[in-house]
Length: 465
Ligand code: NAD
Image (cartoon, rainbow, N blue to C red; front, side):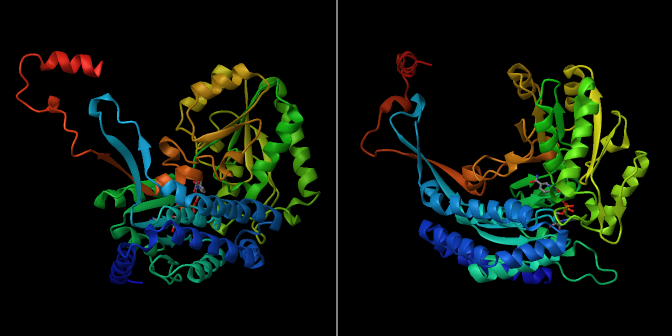
């Protein structure tokens, strides 16, 4: 589509929005239920598309993409009506007597730009939250996951009127075509809300575009998420869970453990156990395991191989299959692996002698999207939660904070702004309109001049502030 077509598309969608259809909670609920039914019906095709795009094993894809999306659809369908209801708020003494309510209302037209790594759920969960809140949505999936992009388009066309929700796919590449021309053209138009998931680099571009129209944004970004293992941790469980968290989608998970900080005395044992777990999970030939996904593209594959080479780490890889076996290696804070987000199955492990040093390193760097801690010591847990700022995380596990349909999910600082999932998702896509309702007949004269001599004293006594 050309820019002019996007303007016409937006005009039609705005007309639909102003028809008021999306203001009816029953309408939102019916749409979300319909979407859930359509997803269940197409489960096989969705799994096949995720396999085409990333060789995702069906169990992994079902769990992390389909089940989470269905859970979000179910949650939002069940609660859309209750969440849309005006919420009573105590007015406080300064405006008593008065009735105060927050009226959630949809923003209007929301643009959702999604990435390729969890292309199904990172497209549909924001769309579900936006629809539950009563918005119209344009979804632009990533060009790097084209099979899932096509399924998303089919699904959305089947479940929603085109002026309610639609999917815009990238135009096929042609020589000399700027690769992100679709997203760029969409971003040139005025939206009522922009929801972006992807890299912090592109996050800058999104925010700059949104600033032109003063459009509110939610940025779900990435970064370097540490996993800290204290010496009192259950090493068997820590190893298994860290190994699993790094295997998911071949490490291309925004909340994957990016690097490991372990107390020096346990690092060797922990690293050995993580290798054993990978062996158990993927068998002797990890590159041919059906339970292990692939790297998204040649460019990403080459970047990861280059990083391994700069770190002096030998890896098992297959350029044809775009697969790299998971690897853990001991290194230091100045390693190239500690510069940018790894987003692949390489796990640098750094020993620490005191928790002070580990926490000081994390705090000296941009606030991570996730942070994980393995310990049995509640005091250590409390300390990490108090001293380290991060989007979300787990104690004695990894990645699960992103999988709840209720727990608010998002980043902080360079890892993002805004939160969704559960009620937070509904509120994110809503303008929470605050309204004071007064009784026409009850009109206390206290606020009106002339104030006279004694009014100040009266006000002080009455308000008690
Ligand atoms: P990406 O930024 O390359 O692409 C994501 C989306 O942005 C796509 O829809 C793409 O079309 C659009 N886009 C890309 N370049 C653009 C440009 N120049 N102008 C306008 N739009 C553009 O991100 P990615 O490589 O697909 O995803 C990887 C990153 O995303 C990692 O940093 C990862 O940590 C992060 N991530 C974060 C979350 C989260 O929930 N916080 C989830 C998944 C991925």
